[in-house]
Image (cartoon, rainbow, N blue to C red):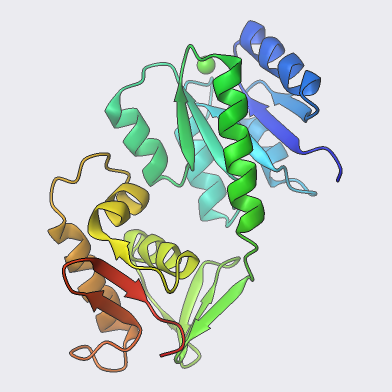
Length: 230
Ligand code: CA
């Protein structure tokens, strides 16, 4: 297997150099971008990087904006946000915008390497076919478009993320707490009702019969389960 390619978007020269060297020493091919614009340009380029390490505080376009833009454009490379502040708000913001994980600065390189490996494992397991279907619903993961009976369905960003998470975990019971954490990015669930409300909306848009869901099932006392082939 060729070396995994890591894009490091970091403006602090010392840190960029240290991390870049360490990654190379560990067998990764590391490319460094010193600002958000260059980072965006590289992150979009082909062949795609395997992982993006993205600093939040960057000159020009900040890390949140880079993350938001990439996800909006359908770039699905795993993103690990590097946050100096370590505030819950920053972590939640990053995860909400589509980052896969975050690491608070200063960090040990051993921890960074472990997180990168975890992201690589996760994305290699996740051999996604670009289009998933159930019933008359088609989800185009590359184009981030959902169609029902061939017609485009308007989903909010959260509805879409919830649907994609359920698709990635189809057939498995998903507790509300897990959905809150993975889709909304909350470490502690303030109100699991939020999940119920969004599930209801999704059903309204995608289920043949809202009152008798065939695909987005409730597992009493447990959570929800997406059944692709009922
Ligand atoms: Ca910075």
